[in-house]
Length: 526
Image 1 (cartoon, rainbow, N blue to C red):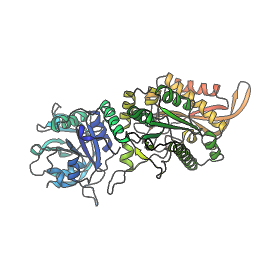
Image 2 (image 1 turned 60 degrees about the vertical axis):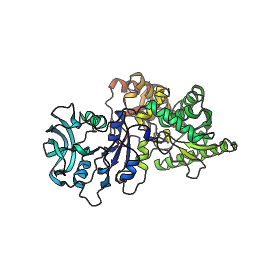
Image 3 (image 1 turned 45 degrees about the vertical axis):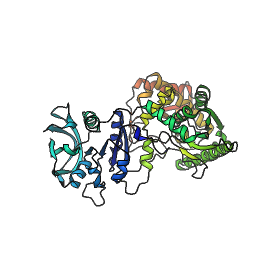
Image 4 (image 1 turned 135 degrees about the vertical axis):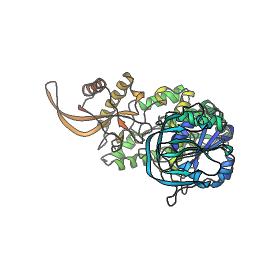
């Protein structure tokens, strides 16, 4: 599905000028139970009007409004009669395009500041006359467009908040969407509810109901195939599509021999037995391990795994299609594409947003496979996907499981991959997971796992001299995986994990803890 039917609920459209916080704006609005959609900054006023938004937000951006090629919106948006909130770069654009003045400040504002409310404004209803805000800008408004008035000032800006009440146009120099603006949620909700008259009708229950209806209407009597990895996204996609069309869905689960301990059994038990989803299990572990024999280069590992996965999946899918009848055929391929994937990968001419893709995901499926894509989660953020999973009664262990790289344990076995080294890593990793859960830390961190190093060292076990392998522990906290810091985990938990690995995993006599952040290090070691 290309999108959800946004005409059924209140919608806020966010014009993206490339800010690192654009997705944060969208998330904050959705947290207030109002649907938000990010669109290119240059989307025409006519197309915006067809989306029937209750309001428009102009995001911040890294550029100066005076920079060559700086992104500017269609000026006709200000005449649509739709409430608009300009944030940082957005307020500069609003002032400039409506005949005010903006100039580059010789004293830039980055970091904390204080906003002083100077006149009543619906944006700040119920808020104190002074409160902390977060700034990140160089330009500043120096004269107002006709019809505007000042409603707030800061240390470096006499025009920190402005409004044209009669046209429902508002602008703030600071960033209400970030956590460093403590009352930012209240400001955004004043815009949503008081100014835009939005209804708080964006819930995951309503999303499931609407999505199931759309899936049934689109698929009709045809059938759907889905590549199930056991991760959150594909699992929730499987549960949602199955809720909509039942046995018209078949999931393909490929065991590439690089899975965690008991992964294959867990997936088959949850989806095959508990949910009664038709599951095609393919044990291709020997095939993958043969292709990886002697390979040590990380990029080559990923490429081999991605290519082999495509071949296995494609051949299995074609076997299913061979069973097609004229009335009921496998026509659709369901995927767990999420909203950040859509935002980051869409190629829109002139879009200033940074394009960031994770290099740990297994490569995409062949473009020429004879399937139409079905992507029911493509409008959701990760936290919303987890909420959908809970609504669909998926187990907590799947809904809140930590991210796992597409190439599996291949990027956690440093150097050559052998069945023996994989077995050592699986046992060590299982201990890490079990002890983190026992200590009630597993769901508090972003990721916690073991890494098998190509390093042997001398040890003493009993009265015997040993020369065995080293396991590194990696435990990090993060919001989205783009940046991360190592967790100051209690020493007693580290001690327990280390003791168990050394005592229970044959072939390991040393455990180390990785205390590097991202950047400069990555979360995964390869």
